[in-house]
Image (cartoon, rainbow, N blue to C red; front, side, top):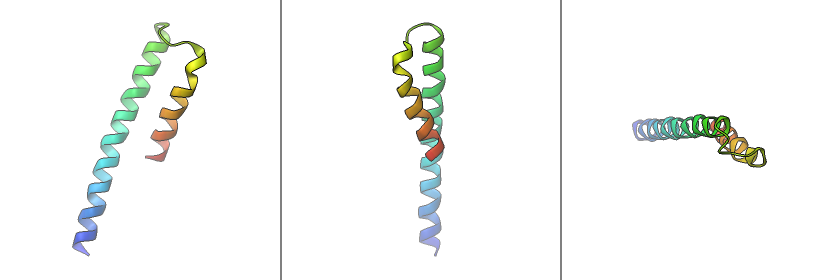
Length: 56
């Protein structure tokens, strides 16, 4: 039981770290979009980031 709890805690910590990375990616994407560095035809990248964030 204790081993399983430690395993679940590790998974939770990893998800938290991945979520922070995804959220940083979203912030960067929005910033680049606002600066005109990203054209509207690459909205799929943002969609993928948002989907990852939701899954985590």
